Image (cartoon, rainbow over all chains, first blue to last red):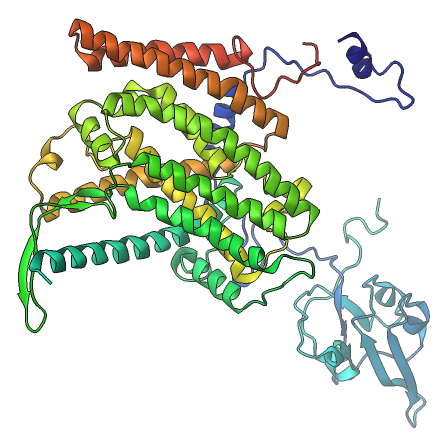
Length: 180
Length: 399
C-alpha cells in the first residue's frame, strides 16, 4: 500500500502525471444512474434539432451564411454577356491554379474571355478570384449542391458559369467590412 | 395417422411458424426502436425515410447486407468463421421455445376433405415446447451462445476479435452464475422450473417482482451482461477493440450477429416478464384465468407483448444512458457484489418460505414485508458503497 501510494502521488515518476483524486466513497452510483436515466428520458420529449435536408434547407435558427463560398458564378451585363474583361488577375491570384483563361479581343479593342474554365475539383474556394476581380464579374456562390455523374462535369465553362442563378457571396460582412 | 396426431402436428406447426415470424419481425422492430430511441434521446430524429416513420429501414438494411460482399480475411479459420454467426444466432432463437406467450387456446375438432379429421383435446398451451425442465433449458442453451462469440474471436485471426471473444467468455461465465442464482428464489416460490408453472404460481400469489425485488434487480443486471449490452458490452467495446468479436465480419455473417444480439434482447425481455411480471397474466383481474377462449388469448398476448416491449425499451434506454464499464469493474460487480447478494438472498428467501410453512403464516404478506426490508437494505448498502462496493472503487485509490 505504501509503495502503491507513491505511484499515485507521482513523486518518484520521471514524467509528471496529474492524478485526479476521485472520491471513491461518497459517490452514489445508484443515484447517478437514475439521474442519468431521467436525463435521457427527458430528452426523448424535447423538440428535435434535426433539419430534414432535401425538404428543409434552412430554419429560423440556421441558414446558409451570405459569406458562404461555394461554386462560382459569372455575372453578366444587360446584353447577357459575361462581365469579364479577361484581365488575367484571377488565374494569377488563384492559389489552386484552377482557372483557365484565354483572352480574346473584338474589332473595337474590347477584351473578352475566349475560354474561361474553372475546375471546381481543384478549387479551394478561397474567394480570391472574386476579391481580385476589378469588374465584379467572377464570384463565389452561396451554393453547395454540386453533385454530378461525371468528373468532367466539374470543369465549369464560361457558358455554365454565366448560367448559374444562385446568390453570390458577400465575402465579408457588409456591416463590418474591415472585419473588426 | 390418428386425428389426435394430425391435430397435434397442425397446432405445433402453426405455433412454430407464427412464433418464428412474429419474432423475426420483432427483431426488425427492435433494431428500428433502438435507432429511433437513441436518436430521440439525443434530440435527433433517426431513420424516418424508408416507409412510414422509417419502419421499413430494417428491411432496407437487411437487403443491403444480403447484397454486400462476403469478405474472407486471409488467415481466418474458414469452417469456424462460418460456424460462429450461426452458433450465436441459433441459441437465442431456441431459448424462445419455452416461454409461454399467452393464455391457452381452446382445442379444435374439424374435418377437411381428402386429409380427414383433426382433433386437439383440451386447451392448447401457447408455448412452442412446454419442456418439463423449463428454465434449465434456457440456462443451458443461452450459455451455448457464448461459443458463437468465442469462436468468432478465435477464428478471425485478429487481435481485436480475439480479445473480444476472451472478454465475452469470462463475462458470460461470470454473469451466468448470478443469473442462475437470482432465479433460484423464483423457483423456491413457484416450486417448479417450468415457465408455465411459474406464471401459474404468480397468478395464484403475486407477481414475483413484488416478493423478490432483489432477485429481479440481480436478474436484470445479469441479463444485460448476458446479452452483451451496454453498460456491459465489453466484447464489442468500439473504443478499444474496434467492434470486438465481429470486427472481421461483413455482410450477412455480420448481420447474423446483429440479429442474434437483438433476438437475445427480446428473449431476455420476455424472460424477465415471465419470471417476475406474471408472464401473460393481466393484473387486478381473474378473468384471464378462466376457461380458454380466443378473447382471453388475444388479451393476454397483448399484455405479455406490452410487458416484453417495456423491458426492450429499458434495454435501449439504459444503453443510451450509461457509459461502458472497465473490465475489472465488470468482474468486481459480478463476483464481489452480485454473487454474494444472490447467495445471501437465497438463504433469506428459503428461511422465509420454510418459516411461513412451519408457522402456517400467510406466505404472501410475509414475503412482501421481507422484500421491502431486503430491498431497502440492499439499496442502502450499495448506495455510496456503504457495505458493498463493486464497480467504481479501485484497489489502491485512497478515498
